[in-house]
Length: 105
Image 1 (cartoon, rainbow, N blue to C red):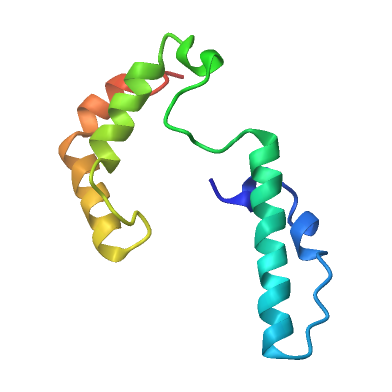
Image 2: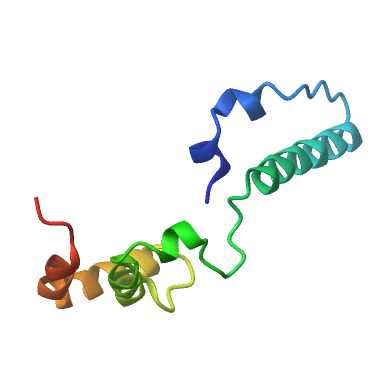
């Protein structure tokens, strides 16, 4: 999960970084990275391979995971052109099945 989706950007963008040299810049970037990592770990949102109980108790979770697996399984980079093309092709091929498992409004 991208940290800016979880926290307001100013939590990290306001991190003081008055670097004047490349060495200072590297040190201050490391400090910022550690700050972001610490905030995410403290919030308990890091994926550890197990679904929390409140997620597992959702009766629709397996269907949601099946749909996600159908679209994203094996795609190494969902932001690359190749990754997006693969996801779109899978969506087109499985459109009806995905509609069946999507929320109905």
